[in-house]
Amino acid sequence: MKKTASAGWQGGFKDGRGTISTESGALNAHPYGYAMRFEGVKGTNPEELIGAAHAGCFTMALSAVMGGEGLTADKMDTKAEVTFDKVGEGFAITKIHLTLKAKVPGATDEKFQELAAKAKANCPVSKVLNCEITLDAALEA
Image 1 (cartoon, rainbow, N blue to C red):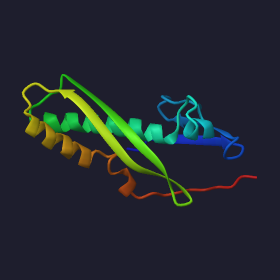
Image 2: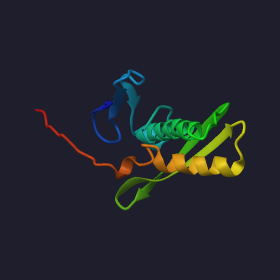
Image 3: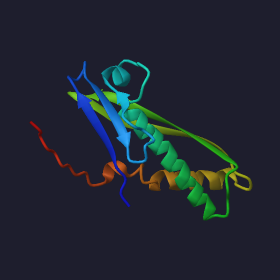
């Protein structure tokens, strides 16, 4: 299974503007830029999108892990706080903190904590930066 997303950019780093699109159409030429990423201007940015992907993946993984134990959540809400810091000459995502609130009938806190830790360690987005990264780069005239 492969999924695709794309980004376009025009202009310089601070004065340029870009768009992000996804194969599903959930994002279709959605704007992003310097001010949205570094100055708090309303709009999206790559770090926010990684946070959304991580929260969604983790929550879904936890549902699967709980299902294997005969547990089903009535409700789960996960927030991902992505820390984006200046590191050396550039920037890096230095931490993602997941905050989960869930209602799971029949689950003890001990079992819930065990299953949540398992989901955190094994959801594909948690492991994404340990995967192979490849690049096809083409310079157009």
